[in-house]
Length: 151
Image (cartoon, rainbow, N blue to C red; front, side, top):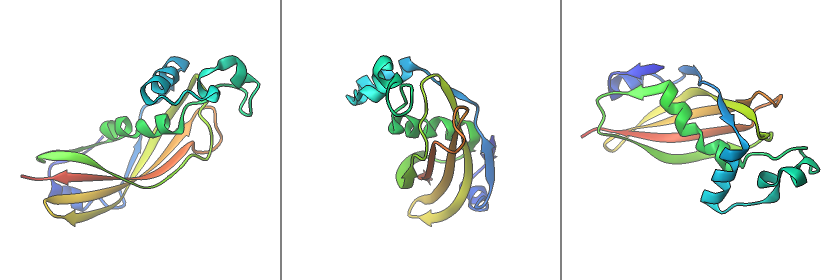
């Protein structure tokens, strides 16, 4: 984990590779729970029998489920101390190049793309590539924006 003692220290982190998170198991139960929370109950996610005959040969995780795990990856890989708040500011780009089959594992690889001053703190752009142990290419690539604010 990269630990920055202050926003001033974080400012010099542009270009820093933070490495990879731990693996996260994406079970069918996790997919079903996500479907219930979001009310996205498309058969390709929640019907194992039908999905087995579908284009991916198994149920797959929602792209937004994969995307929602970014927060977990960031928590494992990055900590900024002496800030009043850290908030998700949004995303610049997101793509889902490959599916995440139920029962597979994913992890995020994170790089600090930029750190820019904003009123009250800094905005950090984090480039994330999510890999899956069942896919030969990334399952999600994104640029996530976070703001670290001081009092």
